[in-house]
Image 1: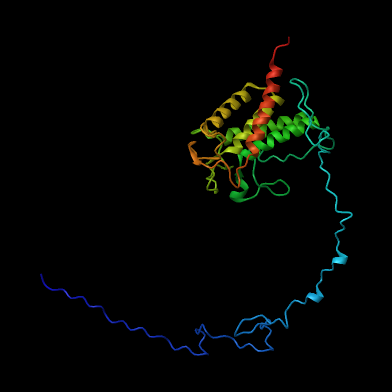
Image 2: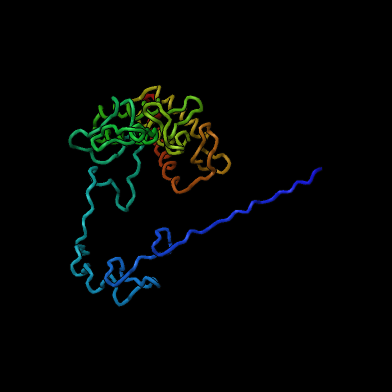
Length: 306
């Protein structure tokens, strides 16, 4: 085999001459003199603070504690809720639940003009972001929909309409905020509610859009039972049973209890954590309590007279 010799070519690198007048001299510093406004009381060589001439004079502070606008004897009052004072029994506990079949104490009736309920696109969608006037925003931000937020708003609005005695508002809440989101928010392939959707059918820009989260399903169960109690229909019962079956099959941990919070689109567990910065105990406990109470009311109302 012939001998092969490899030689590395000699490469000569020359450093350009850098002088104080050369703008490429990165070590060049502008001349700092006492008359230079950029001095800012710093020693340009040692970068030390000059305690004899600080920029802040503590003797001339604009804050005068004797002239503070805060009066500890008369602090600003807490704004009153438009829903009126909470109905809390003496001792700090909420009033006991009424007996089955008896009307629930849901606080004082609400008065005033009709509330503003701004629907979008003829109530066919529920947009996550709108202008202060309730108008649709341009782009993907304006087309964003969250089925969970719509369903959570549904039962809150049904509670509100019940206290107001506004049957028209309640019927609109059922159609726009319960039936609508369950129609366009349900995954027809794998079941469960999508986290985000685009109103025009485009792919949402949120990376987690196809995940199934615990709280939309918990709030959806409450919304369906609230709708059934307000406007009984067999279709609402069927949807509740379908949703509850998916929720308890997929989110509940049969071995260790509690609910998983985050599922992949196919229903498999994406994150095994039971709690974190976003998943607390709030949604599950409230939803289960409210569902049990509303189911008691619904079943009690369906019993034949004795």
